Length: 404
Image (cartoon, rainbow, N blue to C red; front, side):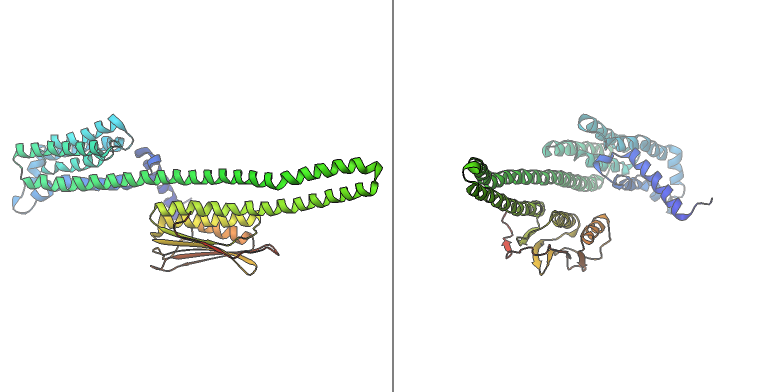
């Protein structure tokens, strides 16, 4: 059976994924960037390209005969294993790989003035050798000092060192900033999870207090009246019947109060998501404001609204590049309306699993999801869900942008 373009594409993607897993650690989520950065190795061969043409005729061939090109190719045999191994190493092993790459630079520099390319890679790894910044800066200074000494010893122009120091510092700083950004995102995720845990803990404590306040007195009254009805049963059946009727009435009132309390408890799902959203966006420099009406929601409605809010806020934090975001949950007639706006980059949205999941959840309860995203005008997501018949709606209470 002949291979179709789709089959061939999947075959190549599967093999590319296997190669990626073999070369790089998956837990660091580096993508293909380390492989693409190997393109800078082309600078190693510039001397042979520049000397191989023009008036110099056979100079490039003479260099091959003299072994300079072969030494450069041989250095790659040592560089590539050390390069990919460094991405999996930490602590002293990482330092050892960094020094091995720098050593290739020092060893090859007398034969190839562009061997300083290796030092650029070593400078990038120097930015990842530990948590404290100053020891990493010390490694960078030591690497550059070694290069400076060799450049002076070989009599190379200082231009070689000047270019190297500019690029090495730039690579070091960018790698450091990327690492710090990754670390802060991990800490932010932990903080986000901790907020959810604390919100759930606070909610359980509130539920316990509410149930104690609500049912403690009622159950005591039921027990007292039941005991009294039993004592009156033989002496005064009519009075006993009144006490039993009171027990029935109190029990029904308690049931109604419990149902009302449960409706309030369910609303805490959206409240917890709003608190988490505020922490997530504030930590990312996005001003967050929200408005929420006190709606009586069924568990299904509560879950769908909370998940929709979570997905939309996550998209704002990851992709929108927004400065301001606003959320409102209000009643419009017999519908609950959740609206999430941001002033990010907007543009055409590619329907992914998140957006598809949002739409499917909303439509499964008879609701509608509307998404507007204009280029440079931000994104608006609006979910409309039918409220239960007779569900009360309180006037919306606006929370200030920086209030918890």
